Length: 377
Image (cartoon, rainbow, N blue to C red):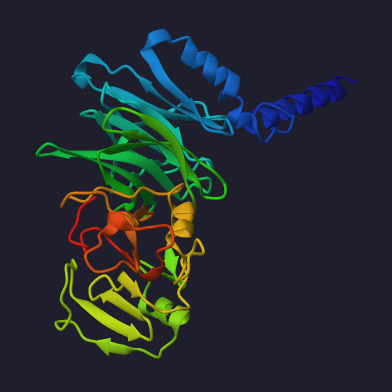
């Protein structure tokens, strides 16, 4: 009996020793046990944590889906006056440090898809904007300057903003679009004596903005998602696009034989009733001059239409600018792309643009840029 008792005791000791060597537990380990001490934060908990810091944290800006937030935290003394920008994603334990920022930073703007965010820092009366990729915190090399914080396009591929320029007593305003990955921005409007403040950008691509004249008068406007054209040809179109619109039946005049106020050497393509100037370096259309009876603008004005119809269609949408050479340019409209659409009417010898009457008819049209017209407006 004694031997049996000792044997059972020995077996028990050996079992305990085996349990100890294999982890001191006979219960299977749960897969998430390694992470059970990590704390993950909900949107409400992150907001509460930021609010608890009081004035030390500011410019708190959430993404539209409320999955992440960017904010500024007051910099430490060793930062020499700079503050710190952070990104905190819902479900993560800690925020990510983005970089040091100016203490006069205007704020942030996150793209609708949450993949990018803007840091808009003060620069003079306006701002300079950095576009940051949310997952890597890498910044676009192009840093647009703006009047106000830029607005994202609905598809998150571009930003729109107003900009301004002052030199030698002249004041210029620009409405610009920057597309991600590009080396520079594109002009929508470029006008002397006006400023543009972008308000919104809808799903159809239309940009709502406030136009401010040199007297401070504000006018709410919308620039439509269109690119002005004549007979399907737009400024900036490639040779292939011109051929697609007008065909291949043209005569080409090579560079060096074409004169004019062009910013680069140009090819000239002559069709029946169309003269197209295409930049050698840019490869895009710089000017169209049209007399063809079949010509028609994107807003439906045709050769032979009277001035009353032209003005009814274009004046509610566009400005007839003042020339730097003096006088208002009647029949010339500033259109999208910082371009000019010029309607010439059947005026008699000695008559000027201001003599245009409702019954006068369109006899030619040009789509070009003010500098090519030897003007600036």
